[in-house]
Length: 476
Image 1 (cartoon, one colour):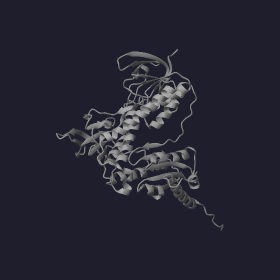
Image 2 (cartoon, one colour):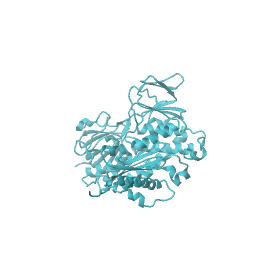
Image 3 (cartoon, rainbow, N blue to C red):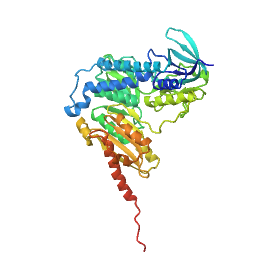
Image 4 (cartoon, rainbow, N blue to C red):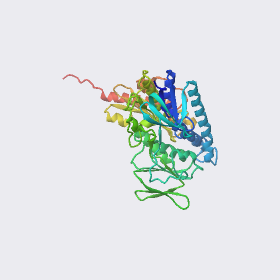
């Protein structure tokens, strides 16, 4: 009846995982991508580019070796924008090649062009050369991702006043930068350029940043940023942005304070890329940020047979969770059984230093009135930390006093996004503090911090148990 079993609009993490999953179930699948190459935002302007830029900056600046050789140590004295791009282009070419091979191996058909709905089962595709055609399908998965929020009052010029997509095309590394928006993207780029010795000011209209992170971890992170002379301005909305005659950018805050810098990065939110899909034709109404509401278990929209996954459905907006969303949506769309993903997933912020978290924060545990205890380990307490020259970084674990189960694991510091998976596994397997106390960890490694934090919590829990023991009183 239809040309395809599933049409996927967008080839980012959610789209590619969905397409390959449906193809492995022997369904006929078409992927429609508006860009010239597959991969979506994740490969071309988001996840992969920003993490590649981070790694390049840390390598060329000698950041990881400064604990031993001093703050002036650098691998390359003059780091250019071309230096940052060179590694990026190699990485992107590799990612695209791998994805193209995966599609070919699984017989996933591809088409370049912009898709829009005619009706629930029909999509119109406009190719780059203007050719128009229509395809019919039993189900559709929208994995169109997001794009930077660009309000009219910001005078973007693609050179000095830029968004988070345009930062990959800068002509030179600025000596000073103002970053507006202390969300994940703003914090990541602010700290990356700070590691390149750019003088960075981070402005956030709210009184706090990264509210979903455990406060103790966030306090340690904030201290590290201020310790290296980053300016953090919270609760100070921007009034206007201008360029002076000398080419400098001038940012005026609503408090009246004026700041100047070589470059301004506006990173205050993203919009769902849904405006060209003609969603009203099928009765779907996105929210004010272009995001689509879905069933959290199946990722089906309010219209049967139409699914959405990835950043376009909102939080947590991670490549890793987007892949799982796409897989589950595809299985449901083609009538295959799909298990729910594990309850706990890791959240990674690739700032300098990294932050990664899984499970409940201490604040969430308190709100639920769960009796608990914490265990802390500083990376400098590990032999591996000494070898690496680390004097910062910490691991925090939260345990239930009643069940002794791990409730949350939170890390700030080198390798946090890798280390978190140990805590994630224990959380999903409902492990207790005894796992960390009784098991052996490779020595010397940063993972040994789990042992240290586990012992710290175990000692404290033992003391808490003694404090709550009821001592029998003699009769009479």
